Image (tube, rainbow, N blue to C red; front, side, top):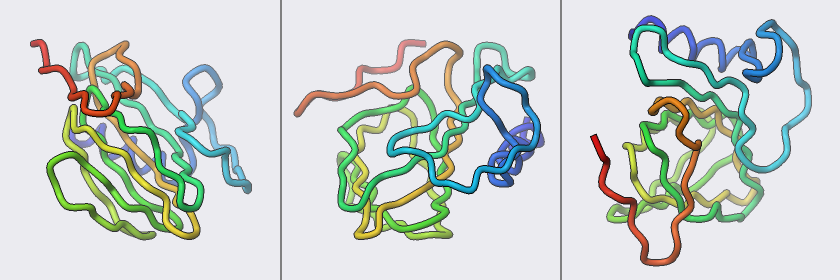
Length: 148
């Protein structure tokens, strides 16, 4: 399983992973995708029933704040350009710059903020098959407990 996850991360970082509904071959994209989470791959994990992986190219515009949300699984990110501030309920803000990586635990409420030049990150998520990528939260709302 570790080898599968490492291979998927390397593919995403090298630009080899493509959207789940298209061919999975090398294609070079010279432009920055639009703001938001641009899904590049969604696929089941063959060695782990009921789990899937999502790989996204995430762009946060300069000084923009992403609405407060959580993910139904772990989120692994690698900042490839710019900077951002990771704002997570219950912890100090964390500044992330190009070359930094960070792990966000499952169901952690957060709302990242782009730095002065914005931020771009490759994000790798592992969660239950068929769940949405993110779930938005209202002010004061907390993620529900995980139902096993």
